[in-house]
Amino acid sequence: MLRRNLRSEFVAGAYVFPGGSVDPDDRSPAAAALCRGRTDAEASAMLGMDSGGLAFWVAALRECFEEAGVMLARRGDPEHPDTGMPLDTSDPETSERFTHYRDALNQQRIGLLDICTEEQLLLAADTMYYISHWITPEVAPKRYDTRFFITAAPPGQIARHDDGETIATIWVRAEDALRRNLAGEIDLLPPTVTNLGAISSFRSTAEVMAWAAQVTSVPTVLPIVVLVDGQLVVLRPGDAGYDEAFSDRLIAGSEMPSDLSAAALEAWGPKADTD
Image (cartoon, rainbow, N blue to C red; front, side, top):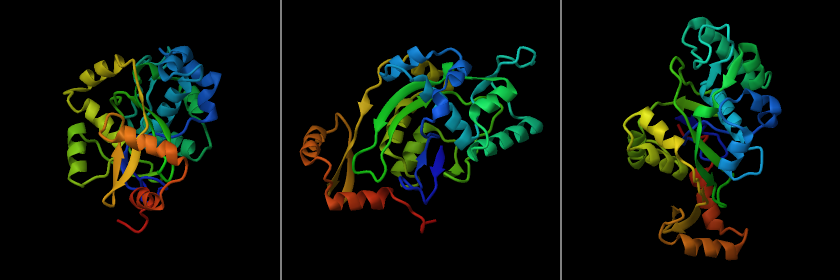
């Protein structure tokens, strides 16, 4: 998990998964051609889209490398001794090379497809599974329509934050992250809590991946935020009071109560003056 920069516009300081927006290059035919084991038609059907769904897998793979330094790809060069195997960057020369690639990618001097072409890599879209879909509440300072994916970390790679958008990296068991959140040691958002809860009962990566591979129905979750005794309360579909709060929000339209907006900004806005 990565800790967001304390100056971030939204959920500053929270621990999150790598992620970001779908870029134009993610939607290109060249990107689709590098994805193995998953077609755009299959990906789009999973996301409930007519087309273009595979771009979300490409974006997730790219953001994982940009933000966490983990390249989820396989060697595609038939002449390479590790062809078909997950990329291993453990030897110093390869590690240094991919560190330079990552820096150049974050500085927008090259693209993910350039790296794949240079290194003859194929993107591991077939082992990345779609498991969750959340839309940020209307009251949030910045809103996202977010698809969550899960995959196994490749052996021979070490995750590192980018020291820009993110300022810390932790590897943590799901149940421990949830416990630390309840204890106030780390900040987690409701989607993160729910996604961690979904895998917290599994005892191994293999169990998680077996579960993720059979997920076929992913409902969209739109939380509603209300103010109760001066505290923000996030209601999700199925929670007591959600339907009433949702109806009230529809009636109110885009007009947000000023006290609710102020509380949301204080809770989720920049924390530049905190340590």
